[in-house]
Structure formats: C-alpha cells, structure tokens
Image 1: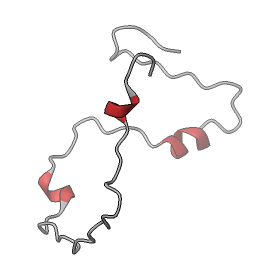
Image 2: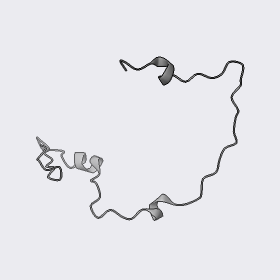
Image 3: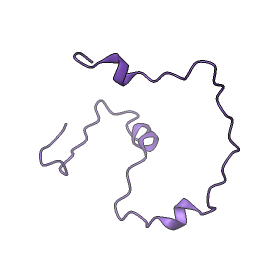
Length: 71
C-alpha cells in the first residue's frame, strides 16, 4: 500500500529466539448443523440447475432480492 511505513506493516521475529510450539487446543464439541436454524429459503444447488439446462439454448436467472434485476 502506498504511503504505509513497512516498519509498521511487516512483522519480524527477534533474532536468536526460537518460536515455541504450543500443544493443539481442543474445541468444544458441538454440531454446527444443530446449532444453526434451518433456512426458509435455501440456495439452489448449482449442479442441478446446470443439469436442467441440457437441451436448452440459454439459462436466465432473475435476482429480485437485490433491488434490481440481474440477468
């Protein structure tokens, strides 16, 4: 980045000091799928959408959520 002092942005280890290897930490066991609620409007599966276009000339997707249409 222009105007940024490299002494501030670059990290250097102290000479002569070896890094310490820490033991692996165990995370709290918990199923992410059970912790999150189900989405009422799941995203479409791209592979199925592409397979459904076999034999057709074009594929059009309308995105009305963004406030404008993307084609």
